[in-house]
Amino acid sequence: MQKQIVYSDNAPKPIGPYSQAVISGGFLFASGQIALDPETGNLVLDDIETETKQVMKNISAVLSAANLSFKNIIKT
Image 1 (cartoon, rainbow, N blue to C red):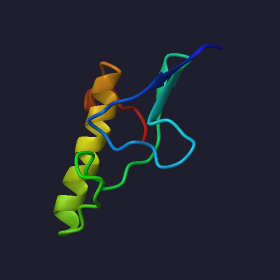
Image 2: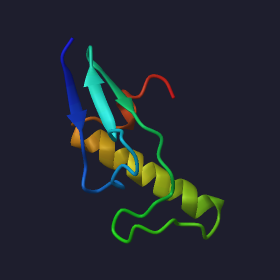
Image 3: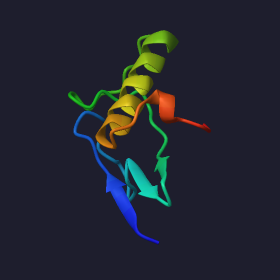
Image 4: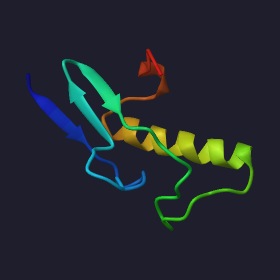
């Protein structure tokens, strides 16, 4: 089975030996995201609302790199 690595400069770079996401078998498998600002490399820890918004921005950036959106998510 062929796989495609998905990468976005608009999401945090992987900290370890993993990809932001992989497409295989018609599905995108994304790594977990934390509230890391990809521009500064700093964690966004102001409050839970701000942290959650940053996580969602990071997920959105990875999905966009694969020409997908939140509408394509079927399981989290």
